[in-house]
Structure formats: C-alpha cells, structure tokens
Length: 279
Image 1 (cartoon, rainbow, N blue to C red):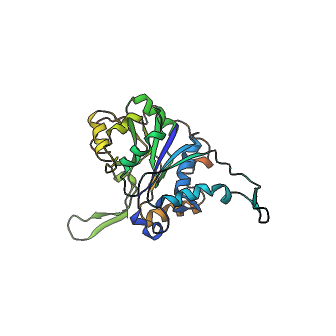
Image 2 (image 1 turned 180 degrees about the vertical axis):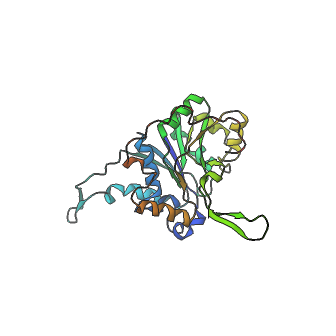
Image 3 (image 1 turned 45 degrees about the vertical axis):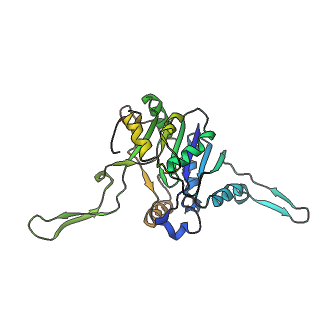
C-alpha cells in the first residue's frame, strides 16, 4: 500500500525556518518532520511513499538524493573519483517525489499524483503532524466501513489557557492550561482512501479539506476513525518547541518504532460517522 504525504505548503507561521527549508524538513531531534512521519508508517510495514512537493520541493528532493551519504560512513577517493560506502542506510523505503506545483492546493496535489497510485487503497497524511496512530487498525477500520475515504479525528491540542471566571466580581477564579478534553474533534490527517475518492477533486485550485470532503460526506462516503491517543501538529514555532521538548525528554510518544508494536484497541474503541459536517 502506498503512502501519500502532502509536503508542498509554504509553512508561513514557521517562517523562522521555512524561509530556508520547506516545513516538512524542519527538524525535531536532528531529523526532519517528514522522516518522523515516514518512520510511523514504516513501523507498520508501509514503505512505499509518494511525496507531493511544492514550495522548495528541490530541497526535499536533495534530501533524499543525499540520504545515503548523510547516513553512511564513506571514503572519498579523490584521485579516482570513487566513493566507497561503509555503512548502508537501513530504511527500506521507496520514495517517489512529484513536483505538484508551488501554488497548487492540497486537492490539486492529490489529483496530480494519482497516476502514481494505481487502483489500490492508499494512505494519505500531512507533512506536519505526528501521532501514535495504529495504522494497521486504521486501515482495517477503513475496509470494514466500505467508505471511499476515512479520516482520523483527533482532539485539538490545548493552545490557550482556560480561565474560570468569578460569578460575582470581575476577577479570575482559576487558571489552567487548556486540556485536550476541552476541544472538539478535528481533522488529524492520517487518511485512508480509495482512488475513486480523488474523483471529487476539480483541479489545482481545490482544497482536499473543502469541496472533496464535503462531497464525500454528501455521498455518505467519509468514515471517521477516532484516535484518542497522542497527536500533535507543527504549525507554529511553539508547536515545534513542544515536539522538541518531548524528544529531549527521551520518550517522544509518536516514536512508536522505538517501542513494542501496540496491541489493537478493543472492539468499539473506534466508531464510524458518515455524513458529518464537522470532525
């Protein structure tokens, strides 16, 4: 099964980094966000990737072209112009990098890579979000629902402080960091889809999150897999700092490849919702 990763956006809210490199190459723990996402899928045996490049796409292409050199010890014979690698990279990945246009919207990018997907079910996610999503369970859930597409719904991470207001005077009665349980479920990426789902996309100017998903909902063909575990996007510098801090603590929750393969959740832990107006 192929995995499509949307990696072409500008990342304007991370301009401290994305003025030089695209957002999927912003590093957490010395590795690009894109690498962390691919490791999640690879943990479940999915190693065939299609990367939708756009803004600074050549930088992403250069990263993979030089991946073996950066991850290997090697000897350079300058006289004979020969490079001898002493340690080969261990990732079993096959990576297809497709230039989908710098200003193309997410739906348009998907439509452009359709020739690389064949006629089989595929996975799809964004190049700026990680989580401990059980991909095997997600795929099984998708097939069970017989929908054209399945989206993973997650709790929105707390970003603001919650204030408890005093009822009788203009003073705060309490203050705490907003908890994930306070927020509604949102689109967390980690889609599974059938090729026919891409028929809902008009062209380059179409956002996957707007008309295509609305059309799938109207057709009763969008299932929702509810993930109640860890999830975090990297939309701002604050988000990056949160992820880096978790990495520095030595047990980042999305690094499931460093842990024992998680057991499947009990029956009923996930549910399908067809024809939803908000996730």
